[in-house]
Length: 616
Image 1: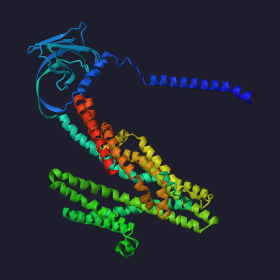
Image 2 (image 1 turned 30 degrees about the vertical axis):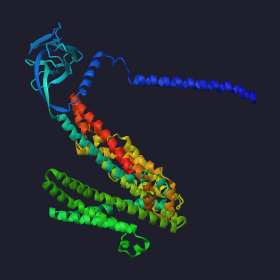
Image 3 (image 1 turned 60 degrees about the vertical axis):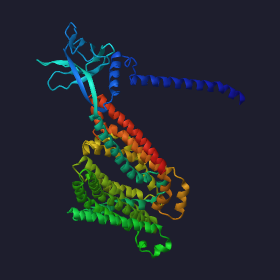
């Protein structure tokens, strides 16, 4: 045995050596191919023409257009020919005691280097060199800037941004504009636009972060494995809940539409809206006080107090009724405020927007609540039916319930596909698949033990995680394209794009924090007999508030930076005007916006850090 070990040691060493050599060769080949794919060519940035172009642009970026200047100038113009004749010549002009020489005074391609020399200028005189294309409506474009030395001379090399051949009597020229003096008159137009747009960007990111956080919080509980893994149900209970879900959702939506329509009849006059809003505010206050009294009273007081008659469902019903009233009465009230407040009319606009949100979302909220109630009742009744019968009867009941639940689901999927693709024969995609798939799964369900617990929570967990991962994989820039088509160019589209991405990103971060909570409080609250909602309220939420606040502020920082890119596709904010200035080669104006973005991000980072320190 000892001899065989010594014999195998050299073989193992050779294998390790060959493996290491193979790894090194593989890494070398990988990077060699990566260099080819990325087209790395260090000679390109060393090209003098490219370096000069880059230097000119950096110089313009380094002189941001921050202040409005009243400038006194004088100009000299030299003619420019295109294309160049066979014999290259220069052009010369004199005036105001200055002399200019352009060599050559023609251009054929954008790679031709032109040299402009001047003398007779005052020491350190500076100015701008512009190209005026042929045509009356052509826009002049800056090609270079100059500064004279102490001897009053300068020499500048530049290339043309474009080459245009004049037609007929049209001419093109090079203008040399000398700046004689400048006086500051206030902020430049670029600075004013930047201030307005940066405020729009910050508020757009704030709205996206706020709404995204509100939606991501409940989503994170569903996407947390440690919470959902505890949820299970028998197949009968699960399928009964699935069958009841569309019924409860439809009833909830109809109730929401009824409440909205009924409240609409009360909103004819502003005075009625004002009175209704006051009543709504009082109703909200009453609901909040009643809930607090119910939660803080001891057991004996609860028995005697009238508040004990009010259950959470009753309080929720009152809150939804108040929301319905506000959704309708807020519209005329907000319009009335917007008319009478003048510059402060945006307060009325806020009420109108909130009322629109309440009016539009109420049917959806009630549909969601109705679906939850239906799922809860369906699961309970399915469990009771399943545990009250045994043997073959239980299997047959489970199979029948499964057929109905899966059939309803298949029918709903068919309706969605029909909405997406507009099939000619609807029954072939809804009714027939529902019957076939429902019947087949019903037969298979009879083979399963009726009282076997199914991991319903894990199924929901994986579906939610898959949805969040899909949304996170779509960049906000792509979402910006979608929402610009949907709602038009402007900050609303950018806010929606950032909101959707914030929901997906925060949902994942929040769910991971929920998964990392301490199990001790969770087990202690569960041992007291608390239900799922009480467990989350008293064992989960106290542990996750600090990281949730920190992530929310950090997401605001991210959204401010992302809004710059969203603006490039028309999503509003400062990115839209930044792209326009860069496309027009207005680098001094673009520099102002880049500086504003950097300052804004730094300030928000400081503010969010201070808020986290105070709140956490």
